[in-house]
Image 1 (cartoon, rainbow over the protein chains, first blue to last red):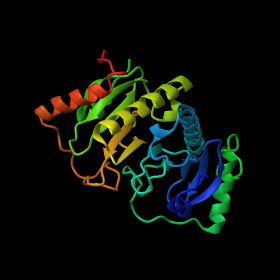
Image 2: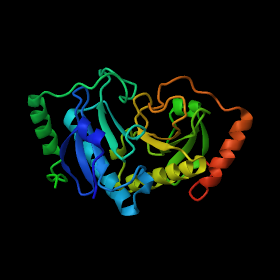
Image 3: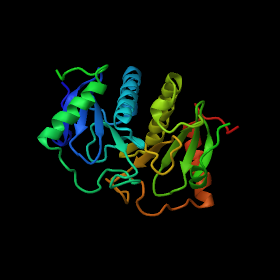
Image 4: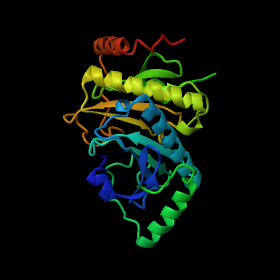
Length: 140
Length: 140
């Protein structure tokens, strides 16, 4: 059975699931930031997924990047599978602005995450789940 | 007609072309690092490619990541479409080691690139083009 990495679980809020992936909101109010985690045990690299999983992940990743970009009108989306700290395969989708505190550097390892307030979480989760509703279902 | 961004051209060595993408070696001997640039004018985000292009880029990206990983036996591949500095869509494939100078941070914007010597370039290009030969053809 697939288990989410404990650090990913600690740092994020679960929004729901796509057919292949868990959909997580990074709990960092500095950046609109969604993470997809394919529910496949023991995979650390994109190319380790089978062909069908690779295609499905591509569809889910491009869907979430476009939806988030359209929602927040980013200057640039940063899409990345890094995994140097958490090796469980996960794909970042970070909406970036030329005015954000880290631009143009990547966001990872820069500064401290700013957790959302409970009120913010409710609003942000509602906004994002609304634009993902075509693929999203509740976590089982 | 598609034109490579001047900064990408300056910082890399052209290895050849895949059906969709130009294949570039980053001229930085600190990391085995390949970049794919889809030959599609005016595109800055993955989701702006049409469905066929998205599928082809996924195949090319996973092929190049696996080939480079197998060749250099990386501890982790970092695959990323960022574009905060150069907006022309390009996908990084960086082979990382726990012993490299930036681990576990991302490589972008850290330290100074170390250019390959002419002798190194010849050897590295030969090694890499050999493992990419199934998809690679000379730049036209």
